[in-house]
Picture 1 (cartoon, chains in turn orange, brown):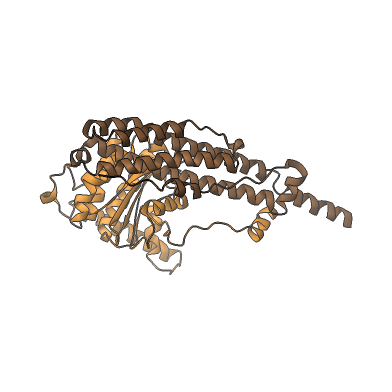
Picture 2: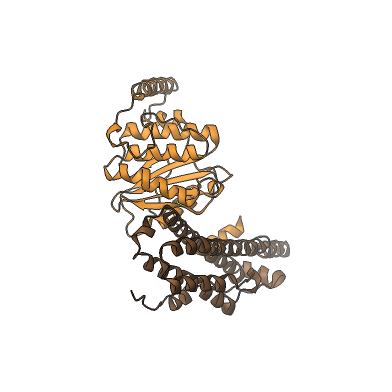
Length: 232
Length: 191
C-alpha cells in the first residue's frame, strides 16, 4: 500500500481523456441518437444475450470525437470499460454523431469468428445504408443480428427480420413487442416504489429502475484493435 | 526501538518494487511479443494482396515488386525484447516503415483501377489491412506504455533503490516513430 502511495506521489499516471463517458448500461447514448424505447429494447436484448452466452455487446454514441480518430477513441473506451467476459468476448459499437463515424471493436476472444473483413461488410452493407437515412436503431439492430448469427447465436430483437439490403421499405420504428415491454416496466416500477416506501426511503423513485435491471459493467474483456470502421 | 523503526521503514522502502520490477519487465517482453505479432500479421496479408492486384493491374509490376521486396526486408529482421537498443530498434522500425510505405504507394496506384477497387476480395483485404495497421498502432502504444512503467520503476525512488540493491536493471530505450517519418518520404508515383 505504501508503495502505491509513493507511486502516486512521485510518478505521473496516465489518465484516459475525460471524454470516455461513464458506463451505465449496454446502451450509452450520449448523443441521443435513439429514443428511450429503442434504447430500452436494445439494452434488454443485449443483457439477455450476455446472460445466455457470455458475449457482451456494448453500444456507445457520442456527440463529437473532437478531432480524435474513432479507432483511437474506441480503444480508449475498450480499455476503460473492459467490455466482455474474462475470455475477451466483447463487442463495442461506437457512433460519433457529428463526424458520422462508426466503429465496431471486436474483443480478442472473438477475432477468430468475427474477422475484420466480416465486420467491415456488416458496417458497409448493413449499417451504413440505414444510418444514411437516419435510422440508427434499425442499423444497430440488423448489425447485432448479423454479428450474432455469425457467432451461431440469435439475439432477441424483433421487427427487423431480414438482414438483406432490400429493407428500406419494410423499416418501421415501432416494434410490436413494445407495449408489453412497457407494461412490465410499469409493474416493476410500481413494485419498486412500494418496496421503497415500506422501508421508509423517500429518495428519488427512479433509482429503483436501474436497480431492478441489475448493474452493468465490463467483465474484464481485452481488445487488441480488431474490428472495422465506416462513415455514413 | 528507534532502530527497529528505522529497520522497518528501510524494509518497506526496499520492498517497493521487489515484485513489481520483474513484473513490469515481463510486461515489456509480452508487449514486445505482441508488437512483433501484429507486424507479422501485416506481412502475412501481403501475398494475398499482391495476387489480387496482379489480376487487375498487370502493368504495375514495379509497385508490386516493391511491396514484395519490402515485405522480405521487414520479415527478415527478428529481435527479441532483450536485444532492443536504439540501433536495433531503428533498423527494425525502418524495415517496417518501408513495408508500410510500399503498401501506401500500392493503394495510391490502385485508385486507377475501379474494377479492382470494386472487387470483393480486394475490399476485404483493404479492410484487413486497415485492421492490422490499427492493431500495430495499439500494440506499439501499449509497448511504449510498458516501457514507461518499467523505466519509472527503475529510475524513481524508492523503487530505484530496490533496483540498485537487487536487480541492477538498466533503463530501456523508448520506442519512437521518428524514423518512420524519414522512410515515409516516398518518391512520387507517376501515372
